[in-house]
Image 1: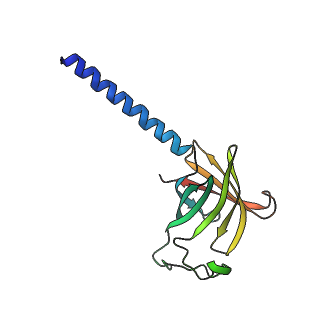
Image 2: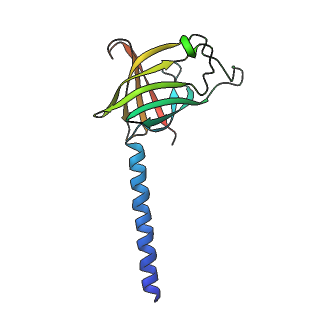
Image 3: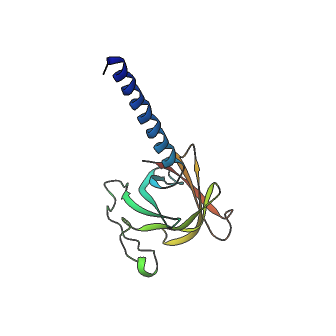
Length: 154
């Protein structure tokens, strides 16, 4: 084989790898599936890392890591939760259930606020080319609720 052929082959391989990597990145940011840092809408501080997964067309979100000051309890329990979640560790708790893709949003599911133990209806929408996720919890209608912006970690 001559050197020119090898150089062309190598350049083709590099270009193909770049295209494949770019396509994989585009796929990951077009879905809410992934690891997200939630930001407290009152304090503006990061609170936790939540892993969103998909199974059978439904999204679920589980608290993977708590981002707490060293002075705070590092393994808090959901003391205000009801039923089977009462007094369970917040770390590892599933807080998002039943979210389904609906056009450019995810709807039809619920979100648990471990701080007050309440479960709210929820909707989510990707923003900033998939780098952010606007998560809204509400009672009755979306107008009666609050929104947090989560930041994609991976």
